[in-house]
Image 1 (cartoon, rainbow, N blue to C red):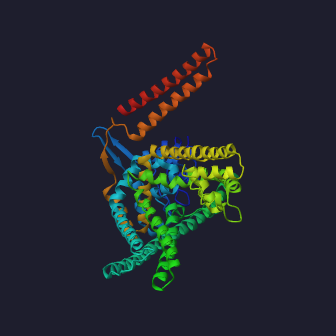
Image 2: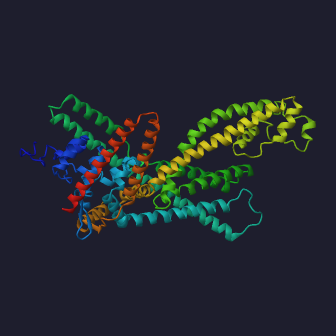
Image 3: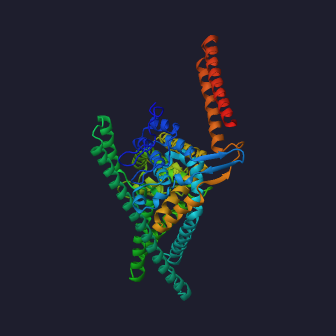
Length: 553
């Protein structure tokens, strides 16, 4: 009604915010949707550099999807689709202050995490990812992968050239290669440390500037808006607490935590290796060094998944692997509750005791293995082997039962219970959890791969010098405003097809459940139910016909 009476829909407040910008910043979904319907501009920017779509992605993603739709124009006659990418990457970000305190749409989408895959799925975001990947993403990705492949080669050679048992004969060529490899390993380790420190510093400084700027804005709200209601004041206080407790994107990325863990491990390994190799330490210390190098090589190779997650085919599997610890932790809690009492029981019944040995008549028997349950460490490992359906020494248990007058039926019940509980129930429970994780991730396989690519783009973009970032923004403003692509209105996208199939399946499941519940109901009840379903489907068809008429006109 205000718009009909002549109210200015693009009016500005003291910070240069339009009503749509203010609704997006405050998370007012219904008000923002109404303003979009009235034709409010989604590309409005306030005096601090904040723009509407970025705020919508942060506060109300459903409204952001509606705003992103307005940035796409379709020419059905020529079958072209035009993407106004300058609304997502405004040229005002060339201003140093705005760039340091404002997050772009792609950054906000990545900061939201996997919970906002619908935004990544949007065609204009897909187009933005494609262009940024072409601008600098592919080149930066290849550079990082090439550097890390050299790191993998160095650590693999370090492990091969330094066995625990050194060969008696000396080969000068191999020794020279080993020395060169050690130098390269140290140099590339220092490069990794420098790269991680630089990325951490850039992200921390930018997040600190954002928090400072955002808190100043909220203080201005209290200062200039004296007629705030109590509800609005409470919202602003809550927003202040949220901003203070917020963390940077770098610290929320699990792979960055893994990177620092691997760097610490590599530093310790290199330090131990050089001290032992060049200071003449005893052979026993070399065994410990070998174990440390072996663990480090495994961890260093596991980090390769960080770069594989960007690839379309391997991205979903990398996400599944990163979610494995959660599923394993759930099963491990149940396993520990069952495992500890079984270790105690087997040790109590079948161990060698504190005297440290079995009777001579047992040890002389070739079917008896004294290393299965002799001490607590052996017993713990043997009980774990039940879970893997490995050799747990059944003949040994039978001989011990006969010697100690333990009922053989009790021993068999103990073995059967632990085999069923650990190897049948718990292992199948873990497989079920992993299957559920796989199905959830693989349903959105392409979207997950695009999300990981977007995260890589954001990480690479933050490392770029400011003049290169300005260059890419100007490139989008002049060459992709708008970007065009072929559009086939008869084509059904994969996400639309998946959504349709999911709706059909859920409807069928609901109908089967309701009909099963109504087995004892009368025919009149079933007729009323079917009539209501037919009515809702008829309304749906009428709405679709209206939309088709609108598109045709």
